[in-house]
Length: 273
Image (cartoon, rainbow, N blue to C red; front, side, top):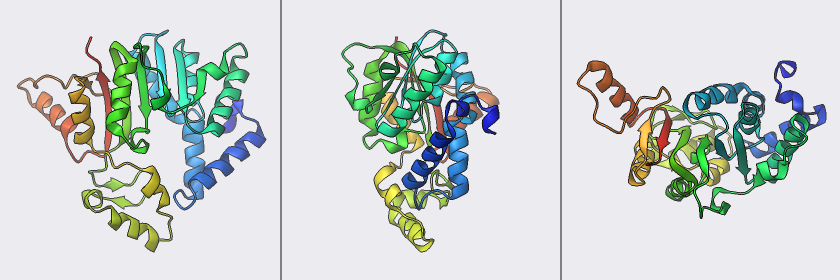
């Protein structure tokens, strides 16, 4: 598997082992050993980023300036730069940024690694002047306590017509919780203690859920973005900011996009130009 992934090949064997230990400690009582391995392959490797890069190529011209918030070990930014995007990443975890900088240095020794990858949260970015053509939030929104403030910051950082890409779990849905992979329902959204008790009974540590998860919802995200006057698209490029055409397919698409119980929130929000 490693030999087939160009981004995992940017890591030494010792670094891979160190990252696995780091993830094991970070998700102690949350992820199983198999989930840790899957997470490593998907998010440190290229597996997860491949489809995201294809989406970016469809929606944003090459050479555009991109910001990946919560960039982790930097794979998406590395892949975006390989496709001629002027891509940057911010991440509050210093260890992950250190690894991302090393990987960039090996792939492109002349790149300014400390400028490309910064140890920072979204709050710490200067937004005096709109800077970015696109901002990506790949499975990050559910980890940032003040969702509304996050979207306001993204709005300030985007140029007119800039696009905000979002993927995150919808916590008003019947699904497996995205991190513990235990059954979740809208009842758990209303009574979070129910899920905490479930974790305890199964010998799982609920601290990560209590301190690291924000139970965002599809309607909640859409409402906050609407207040900032973003327009909406799904990943196929269909526009959902105007009334649907009087056709069965159009009405069904709108119903799916706004469905409160959909399992995941996947959308592109465009800033007014």
